[in-house]
Image 1 (spheres, rainbow, N blue to C red):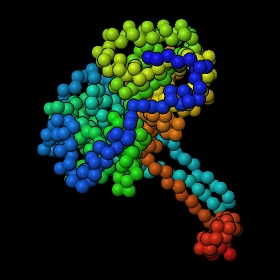
Image 2 (image 1 turned 90 degrees about the vertical axis):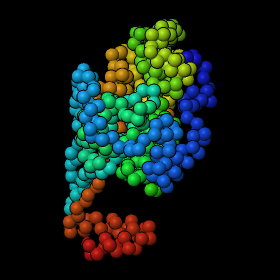
Image 3 (image 1 turned 60 degrees about the vertical axis):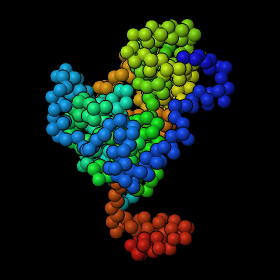
Image 4 (image 1 turned 30 degrees about the vertical axis):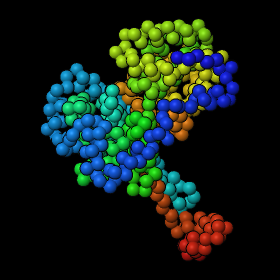
Length: 428
């Protein structure tokens, strides 16, 4: 991990440091555009060909049968089932708290306005496979989708070499009540969900993380008039840890490595106040790395990562807000006092015992979060991500008299005579 001193960084250096380099869309887009075009025109035939090409699996059917789900669940150990059940309860408890009954508001006498949430009827969940399948993501997407009231939830995930889906992913899906599951991965899965095929139903919005091909596919289908909306552009995971002089080096090192082991394009950033603490943590990273089963992946990821030495925690937070990390860990004394200063982060972990792994799995918050600096404009997935807000208004005859002259004047100013007339008819 390369070390930088904040006081020595000029504006250009800071900009470069905060720029994600994991994705080169110029190289990816032509490939993804071809995939989308083929799936759009040829449906299942194109999916079958791309599955054979990219996953080395030849499938006659993409749908996971109910019997497969039942057999898979039986193979999951009771201990793992128990852990997932407990995690699901925490996730559900937290996300239920996001459902708020909005009140009616009288903006003027005789004018009542209110909002009601409606579920997005058809949603698609993409669950990555790759080097580390993510059944926890099934819970993070499936639970809020169910709470939101989505009528149709379609899950796509890459098949393994044997043509099956991992048992634990099917167990997690069943736990969420998801029955439409398809063995399709990559950009072709996003295309299938966005456009629909003979086997895969079209959805209105797609959720879930993925590699650069998946991310590019999501972005492209979101601007296609026949495509689908997306939760956010989400790709390789990242963490930024702010550590003060009293932070335990082993805690901080483990947090950095927990992100680094995800994939070679993950980023783990350390921001600390002294050279001594940086060296102490770096030594601990090297020690723990050697005992990590995925150490070669983590080692390459750390090559994309860096350390910043900065004068104060306040300045560290300013830097973090500029970087806008997916995960922000404040391993500092009195971490809660800095909450109001944090403006750009996907999910924040306060204090030495709030490790990012807890949020990844079972504390209750959602781990589907914005990456690439999109935390400047996006929040993480929530129940409202699976809903749309409809506004209503009820205007009485007296309300029309109160509001009418205002509307008529404004419509006249914009030279929209029809608008003015529609209002005047109701109060004159």
